[in-house]
Length: 321
Ligand SMILES: NC(=O)c1ccc[n+]([C@@H]2O[C@H](COP(=O)([O-])OP(=O)(O)OC[C@H]3O[C@@H](n4cnc5c(N)ncnc54)[C@H](OP(=O)(O)O)[C@@H]3O)[C@@H](O)[C@H]2O)c1
Image 1 (cartoon, rainbow, N blue to C red):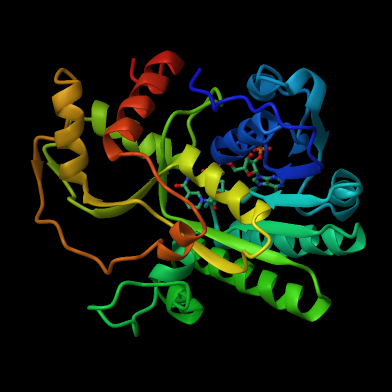
Image 2 (image 1 turned 120 degrees about the horizontal axis):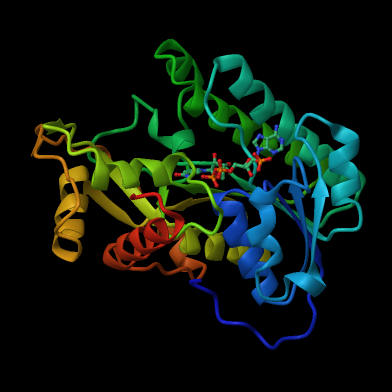
């Protein structure tokens, strides 16, 4: 299993990770355990076998507790968060219908923040998304998007991009709540996350990559993506939690590429998979900058390392069979 280096520092405080069993949540738990934090991970059904990987992480037997909580069930969130000095709010619903998506994302985030306030949590790290920045038609084409850029929620609704609307609303309401109540809220906005999976089933972004190796489309849309490694996102979340000077939002992005660039790297390493045969013309999108996060001390892996480690983990999980 790809692992973080285990630290030898003294025991850290108790922190809560919502959505601990997901793709990113699992890596955040892994990193926190490796840094000797006591971790409470929220899951919706602690007895489900799909969380078994968490109990196998180094330090899990002594320092990890899985607790049942749902974003829409305040008492369950409060009991998970009570006694924690920090919270990493990673959980977010998957896009299915607008109602299913926006309600848990916004109400769920506010429930987490209310519980943090009541439990006197010192800092909350909210996982937002590049989706909360990129849908901004009035941002100039020539200027890289920075943290002052917000997606236009009305525009997202008009084009029925419910995921962008939900992440934008959830993040902006989180900052409003923090400001109104004196709660220390910081956010991270990762773009498309690839990298090795720890959990047994693939999440949406990992499936996107796995499909490129399997489906062999005659013509693939050569879309532009901004990619970041899941381990680098976990590092970013813990960095913005630990650095006292961190404040506001942090764009978390590493590589700006088209689908064909990804396929070219994969083909060099793994020539025999069933790749797309042709590509449409790629369109360049507005750039985004992680300079603010880098100034805080963040660095990131090469795209090659991310892609190879992703594929190796998919092979182990049987995703490419
Ligand atoms: N993957 C990406 O490319 C990407 C990019 C930008 C931002 N993000 C953000 O990163 C975060 C993690 O995404 P991921 O890719 O790791 O997704 P994931 O693997 O699907 O994990 C999502 C987690 O949210 C939990 N969840 C969903 N609805 C819930 C509810 N009502 N109550 C409690 N927990 C709930 C799920 O819990 P169960 O285990 O109980 O199902 C799951 O653990 C999300 O906030 C997402 O918006 C992801």
